[in-house]
Image (cartoon, rainbow, N blue to C red; front, side, top):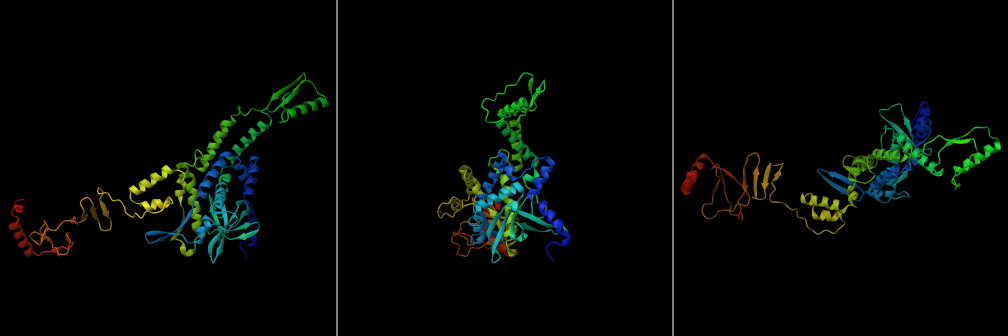
Length: 460
């Protein structure tokens, strides 16, 4: 039996139309008397600016692949999927062009698609598919365990065959973008642009009607109509119409200035830019955080969901290299490197590698003497300034570079009189870490000997 039963066939066809962009345009046209689609939206400067800015920012970022190995992360550089996502896609367009188109579809329609070509079950080719050619067939008999398939120009494709990046989705294979979510503001801006164009075509003349005190003959009416038509056309250079006695013109519309079209257009553009997550349409730090990063996160999740093999899930993942976003700002980039070097989580050669410079072979990490280092596993604190290590729990420790006094006694006694530290003759000027616990009799003998050799210490 097929994917859908006979009972569901009609419902399936209805749902396919409902999920296409054409149906949304038809519904909006019936409600508001005009249609809004992606082409209409992209004619609005603020929409085109935001879409192109975000899509260009994401398209220029390289995609990397990583594998978690215990507590460490290792970059994978020899996988064919890296080539597929960054350079050669297998399609007629490059990886950057494909990602640009997919981000544009994602923002405007909420759905971005690419067909996955596989060799030996490993994805190694991607073919971009425009959202307008993709319809969804839903099986609504079970809305918990969602089942659907794609229809592209009449041919059926299953979800695992498609790379899909969705926004505001209901879980049935398609999403909703700014065109479907915010048609009113987009159509308002578009209609204001059309009004300004009409005013320009008419030379700024207002609409109105002619009022005559007496009935005009048909030749006179035709003559006035012809003159009036010429007045509202670009062919008329004089913009003058002579009205006979008894004929008067009455205005029925306002000019663009009277309607404050320019101010309203600025307000509409500002609201549209806010929908995309930017306040000024500039790729600032706030725009990267609010507009670009959510798109990057959506694409990374889609790559992990559709391009990873079953045995790779949980250990392998894709990630964009967002360092390219600061390529054009050398001051910001170098300031970040300075912080990284100062806090010792990057080395000099790592910085040079990111700047495409040859390594110097300097593998040292600067360690300030003013810092105190804690080993959380052993609870030991090391102070470089005094070269001493102390255990937090017991308070025991020693100066690891304390010289050995070989002038007299070979035994060095702890000031508490409880432990003795014995040199082995092979210390090279430093004490060993071995401590020997003494019996009560030995402690008494050593204490007596210590009092005899150092009588001044007993007084203190």
